[in-house]
Length: 339
Image (cartoon, rainbow, N blue to C red; front, side):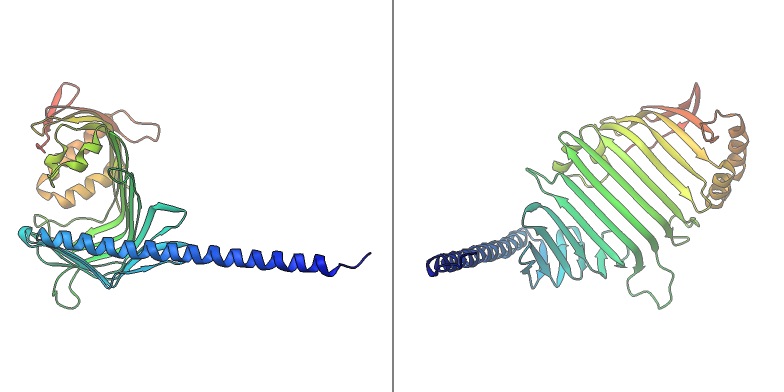
């Protein structure tokens, strides 16, 4: 084969130099753009914190630093906190890390380390620690489209508790998910092996619980703009309990599903299906919590033998609620509290 001529070799050499030069220029432009975005992120955080301080809220993101180069852009803080002196509310925690892929900046994932100090009006000062706590947010306008929070090995103690004191609450793991498609909102919650200290709630001994809830709110998007921070915010809402399930350690439990609505006065209406897995186990657990109602619980347990069963053999009751008044058929069984 004929050998390459000096002219063709020079052309290939120049092409290689142009290619390398182009890659270097592209890399320099990308790097400059990344650091510009990083600087904008740090500036925005500082501006937002200053705006909160003007409102009397002490928001903290100590040593805020952009990170993630080259494929991600995010923010790291050595300590984070939020304090609203007017409401006697404050939360401080450890290291915070967040990041978004450069090619998908609207999806932000974050991780926060404990321990945390929590002060809430009407509640004893608390300290919390956990093994893992992460979140994922899908940004959209005007509000986030999806929010997911997952954590494991939560332990909550009274602050300055004596060494070896029983924790106020322990949870093996839990998840919370929000998603919105205006005007609808879906909320899903689950937790495993929640144990609340005995005698903390109404001086009662509470068993270990595992639970899950999957709720659809027909106009849940409207909740995001409301100032209320208690259950009254749900007034005027309607939706569907896809499933609300509470289980005890032996596998027994109660599940509720069905459509519902909440009046402007907080009264609940709905058509619910209540299923009881292993009624004997449920009765034993409830008698431990409410020993004064032992006879009533025993009578209900006997009546469950005559209740229709679902495909798994679990007794299932249709319960209707109208303005808070509950009935099984034409038999009144009590009234739900107003929200």
